[in-house]
Length: 167
Image: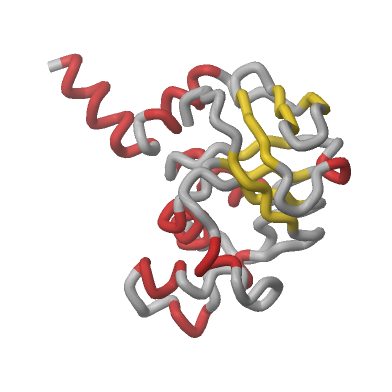
């Protein structure tokens, strides 16, 4: 996610959003687009149908807990979510998200963000600007080397490009 001055919509969720909510087990054998169409429906039935490319998911503690299924992050990528901002993440979800090209930012101040606030996120600087309230929040920056993976579209495209440059 390159730094952009374009503000996007915040979708607010609470604590303990687990991988079963992100990628419901009943749809695991379906296509990725079908699976994504059910993402977070148990907590917000309209999310998957109304989220727009570039929107942000904002949540509390322990986002992505549960199984190690990478489809949880893939569903959000498929829906066009540009980043997830939360107080904390399950370790494996955090890593899966970055490996799939989805920035994940740890931010202690997420409680200050409200539904439909317009945000601008600079993941390398670790700065979130709330255009709606004119507030700025500090978050843990994402290391530039990890952002190179994100900007390449994930770990596999990053490695393919790296190996192609070396040959």
